[in-house]
Length: 121
Image (cartoon, rainbow, N blue to C red; front, side, top):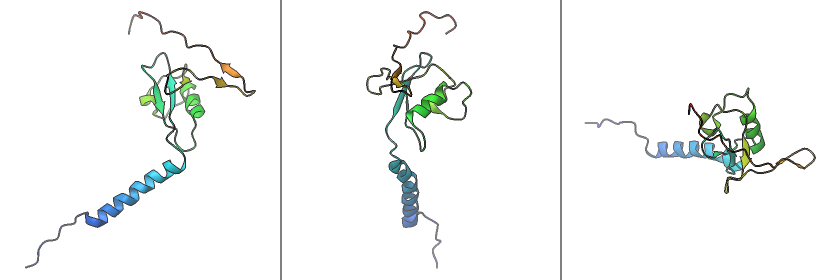
């Protein structure tokens, strides 16, 4: 009598999983992804850490977060806060100087303190 054969992943499944895994990992490794960018906003609790994807930079993420018309990306947990974002040093959580076109620091002021008390929160 012949035994019923059931489809199992076996070696074929392991090979498929390895190929799919490499197809996902190789573009990220080649593009140099892995360097995080950190951002703060007085309306956002904590520091937002973003690893830019292909074709993105820390500046493009910051521009997105500060554009009131931007939609469609899920940076910072999908926050809807637009405007008031500043790039910070990921290790220290302190603002980094933004460089203008002429190479001078555009804004080196310290961020304003969050309002104290605050009814309605």
